[in-house]
Image (cartoon, rainbow, N blue to C red; front, side, top):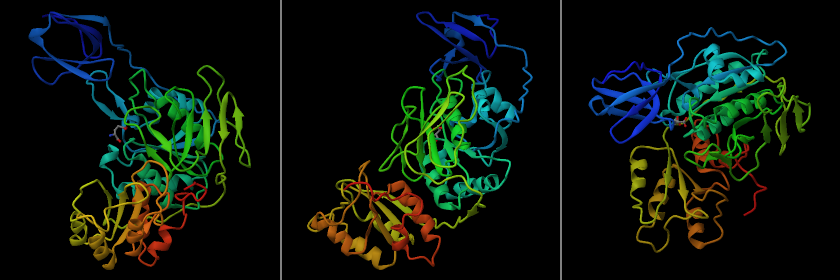
Length: 442
Ligand code: DGL
């Protein structure tokens, strides 16, 4: 089989019964032809099975010279790239992804963000899938964020991050950063920039608008619906990933979003939505920010950090029939605190059950290990006073953590236990960064 096709070309691969269309990739395996399909997936063929490779469109050979015009009318923002789909570019020749690390590259892939602001600085502390991150990565991001927030040339900071554990990082930044003066926006994409269905452009536009707004909060900004129409700016300690693939993967839980953000449609004159000195809806150049609740206003404070963190902590999900001896692992390995994602109002087997957790939990608590109870329900709060088995758990010293989300409670516990001088129970029930919402009903 002879073909004039080169990597990067749009081709049709003809097999005896089927024809596949996609972008030809460089293949490292002899005898194998690799194709990137429209769905984003790669498919490999044995050369001997191919009847013909028909070129539909040659890859563009011209090397574009990218020039980003700085627009001094536009505000400067900074971007921290940490990994995930949003921070990678797709190479049409190899099919591989590599990090975007210069303003020029960023401009090529995401020109939309530059319609709203100058991306004056890009920092790349590491490139990781977010499931590979831990508290040390959260600390690194916080340190860079602080430097950028204290730079008078920068109006706001965007952190581009994988989706899977983004809400852990947003919680960590909410506790680590003190005296916040400007917006800190965490954003993502579920689908890569080479796919027509990518959510990256809208999320970045919304994030740029949030970063230059007067909302001085740690917030997660992303699609508000499955359409490409608006985003929510969501509080960093009250948000969860609730869908594994949809664009509106994140939802605020047990609270309200700060705002709805409507970027101007393409082609409409764009500039940042004007900021005001008090919480108010803003509209400018076709961009609109609709405020939904009160927030901390942009100010002139100098940001400080409190990065202390105890790593011997665990988050444990209860399931029916679970052997409570699993808790002995934490006891033996000298853990300092455990968050239990219990069922419903905060239940684990107690009283008469043969699998009662009460004796082991009693021992754990008596050894000074903190036990916090959250719910594995998506919404709502725990309550130790409704059933007698809940009271039992309460009596042995487990702390019911109100409406705090389990992931947030886990991050907060590490941070609180990092301060041995603090009263852990008091601090866990003190609303430090919007993690508790007493206005939420029972
Ligand atoms: N596993 C994902 C992560 O959280 C990669 C894809 C994404 O960006 O969500 O990093």
